[in-house]
Image 1 (spheres, rainbow, N blue to C red):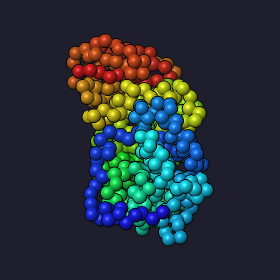
Image 2 (cartoon, helix red, strand yellow):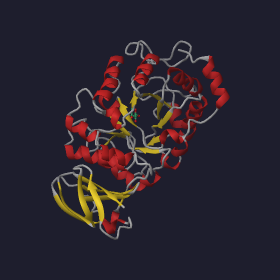
Image 3 (tube, rainbow, N blue to C red):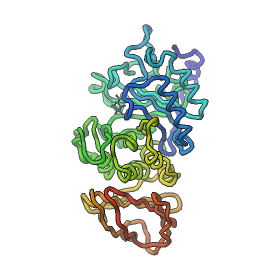
Image 4 (cartoon, rainbow, N blue to C red):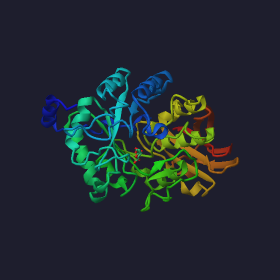
Amino acid sequence: MKPSLTLLTLAIATGTTAGAKLAQTPQMGFNTWNSFKANYNESTINHITDLLLSLGLKDAGYNHLLLDEGWSDMSRTADGYLQSNQTTFPNGITPLAERVHSKGLKLGLYGDSGILTCGFRPGSWGYEERDALTLASWGVDYWKYDNCGGFQAMSNAPQERFSLMRDALERTGREIFYSVCEWGFQFPWHWGGGIGHSYRMSGDITASFINETGCPCKTAYCLNTGYAGCSVTSIMRKMREISVYQKPGHWLDMDMLEVGVGDMTVNMQKTHFAFWAALKSPLIIGADLRTLKNESLEVLTNRDIIALNQDSLGKPVHFVEDVSVEGSLQVWAGEVKGGNVVLIFNEKSYPQEVEVSLKDLGLGIERPVRAKELWSGKSWGKIDSVEASLGAYQTLVFRISR
Ligand code: GAL
């Protein structure tokens, strides 16, 4: 469908920015990619929409329904417009957006800054203006923009490609969240904040806690970030150097959650979720909601952990090197409104006794402080150190009131 003339006029008249107000806290939602890849259709999406409500996920804050690779057709219309996959979404995107909006949710789609998406569907290079208007005319609220592209992705700088679409989206006059997916190539934490509301900082996550399937870089500043296959802990490792770049308005995106995907233990899932939350990553569920186990749903809907992510200060935790033990114990700490947060992660595959003194964390804690452990929900009273037995891969998360 062609964008309407009214929209075109509006776009030219306003030229205004959708603005960083869209991303004052990290975005939350569900994305199709981790569980469905490109294999989903209108009825799958309607089902997922309904599950976001009936499972209590919308109430917990997950308000975006994001269609990744697969929603669009293998070719544009004869006159050059993006169109939905004519078999799986025969009714187009407008009725889908209307249904999603009627449930109080927002709709997102996926595209690419080159001539093709990673799945060889049409990319937006050279069509930025037209595609942005098409999205706006359909009622789309969120646009994930990828880096595969083919020739253009490699020969034109990402700053150029991603800015072109930012400007086009802004000119539509519709508020569209812009999620930059550049896999951490060219270190986007140095420039992505000026372009997207969020930007990916690594290759694709895989449903594995420790083992990589194709993610050679172990640190953020490394020239072969890999395109896909990063474990939960390798993405956490990269954040040691770059969590400092997290700011309201533009968030480093640690990629979609693998909570409830694959065979991670509950402790692994809790650790994964706690770090994504406390590091202020977008919280985008990647699990198949139709088969989600209760134990994973409980992890994903823990209100106290979500509150860390959505805290109004928008400050991420940082790695506390002095009290951590490489390969064994990780301590991360930071500020939240009214206090602090401390994460203590047993990196071993067996239980460990740990002792961490709060005054050593650089938080200015000199006296005993009131602490609550968020996974158990238990108050620890006033403490000046944590002495605890941690299970394999377990993370204790303390919220400290000051
Ligand atoms: C990758 C991207 C993934 C997913 C996939 C779809 O480049 O990082 O998150 O969108 O493309 O083909």
